[in-house]
Image 1 (cartoon, rainbow, N blue to C red):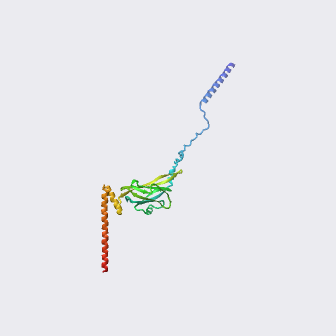
Image 2: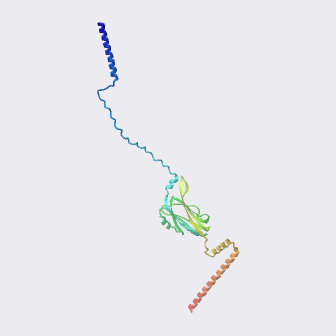
Image 3: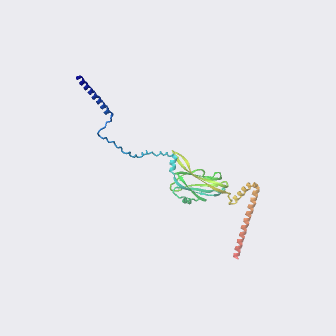
Length: 266
């Protein structure tokens, strides 16, 4: 009985242990449930993002002006007026003038010209030192020749004068060139501002006295290949006849005047 009771107790203990192990295994296999309800956090809706601010870009670095450009920017607007003869005669000298001003209107500046011919004007950029050149190639003698430089006044007009003598007949050209004299780093040079070319019709000059008529006849005779001796004889005859006719006319005029005086006295 004692062995049976002891065996029963061992069996019961083993059953309890197995049941405890099974219960532990069962409980550990199930997920743990808390008696407290955990709230699921609510996420806020995404806020719209502002567009990225563009990074400001610096303006391109300006290219520095050249010394010439700096000098050209200092120039001011002005006017130049000049006379255009349009028609000239070989061997006859005529004046040509040009006037430049900063503050005088073109129409008023043309009114200051005194030389004969068509009056014209043009606008141009002006520096404080300018030069003007009048050229006509082989068709004209121009005095003074070459560039004529002057300092420019801001108030009074600046004047240039030339004497021009045509040497060739037919359609010719005179050119007025105006340049600015610019100093850069101590060196002076010119910058062309304007070039004005005008056509000039040059005709044969007509003789004005006996000597010019003789010279003209001589030139014409040589042009046609006449012998100068024969031509001189013709000129002598014509000149002698002219002097005789003039003397006879004077004599007749004197007699008529004398006759009129006698009749008045009678």
